[in-house]
Every structure is written in structure tokens, then in C-alpha cells.
Length: 245
Image (tube, rainbow, N blue to C red):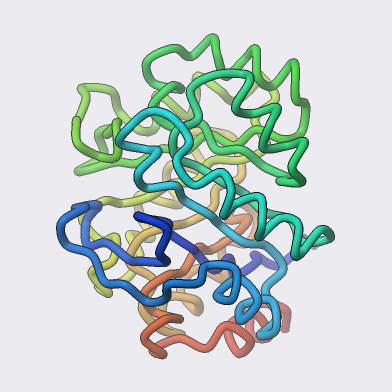
């Protein structure tokens, strides 16, 4: 029997604050807290088994911007698996984050521009590398979703199936932050065709989404949720209990 997917609260960092964007637009943000470490504590208290951190400024700038905040969260919860994406473009950045206590590092834009970098990272940091695939209409987007490429999400996933990637974080950009439900079909299709466990992201709204994803526990490793838990349309503890049952 496969392990139940884990609910993963998202903490998106912009200008030192915890925010949520709509469809990745930096100008369309909602600030939920000025204290990201306290936000992490809230989700841990509610039963989070893993956290998803995104350095939004880093994703656009190409270099880590929120390293000190990230380090503070990792230091506060040393036994909690934490995954992070945004601004990861070189080995030194990966090493510094893992040394700081993070468990998984998500490679997004760099995975598209230089696939060999992922292979090298998996060799150097075995078991710690996740590939982030953000897609619009099935096509991969990069640089904080600013550029849509001509690469199919499924083809990119297949490219990394045998190099040691732990999982794929798949985000449907059109649904991210829009509270319109998960794109179940594309998410499951990516997992089936790509051959790697997938962490679903984008559009999680309420328990109905959790119920729809539960039957695919054989290929869906986790479910990232942001706006839904911040606005109260989804209860983290209730969702995890349902998946565990």
C-alpha cells in the first residue's frame, strides 16, 4: 500500500513578507503576514509534515534573496522536512541551503535551460533534488513564469526520470492562486508519463480537491496548498487526516 500524500503548506516570500500571488504575477499579491517564521510555526502547530518555501524575488532575480528568512525557518524547525525553490541556479546555492538544514531543493528554470545541471546536482546531493515544472497549457514556463517555452511538461519530466530526481513539483500556472481547483488530468498524466512521483500544486481550493487527488496516491506524493489554508477554505489537519484514513 502506498503512503498517503502529504499536505504541504506553501510559504511564498516576497520583500520579506509571506504573500500569495495570482497566476504568478508579482504585482497581484496578497500579503498574509510580515513574519514568515511565525507562519511556519502556525502550520507546524496544525500538523504540517513538510513545508514548501518559495523565494519569489529570487525566482525573478536568479539569485537567493530571502536566505536569512529561510535559514531562520530551518533553524526553528530542524526536524521538519523543508523544500525550497526560487533563485537556485548553481551548486553553491544548493550546498548552502542544505547545510542550513533544508531537505529538498527545487530546480526550476535551470532545469529547462541546463538539464545537465540537474544530473550533476543529483549526483552531488543525492536524494535532495526536486525538479519544479511550471506549465501553462501544458508548456513549461521559466523565470518566475515570465517566459513560456516550447517544451512540453511531460517531455521535460521524462528527461529526468532516471537521473536521481526525488520528485516533480508540478504547477498549473493558470490555476495557481485562483481557487479554481487542481488540474487533476494534467497532474496525473505528468506522473504517469514522466515516471516520477509528483507533488501537485496550483488551484487547491477545498476538500473536494483533496478527495479527487486521494485515489492517485500511487503517483501523487504531496499536495501543496497556499491561498486555501490562508483564507480558511481548507483545514490543513482535516485534509491530512482524510488522506491518512
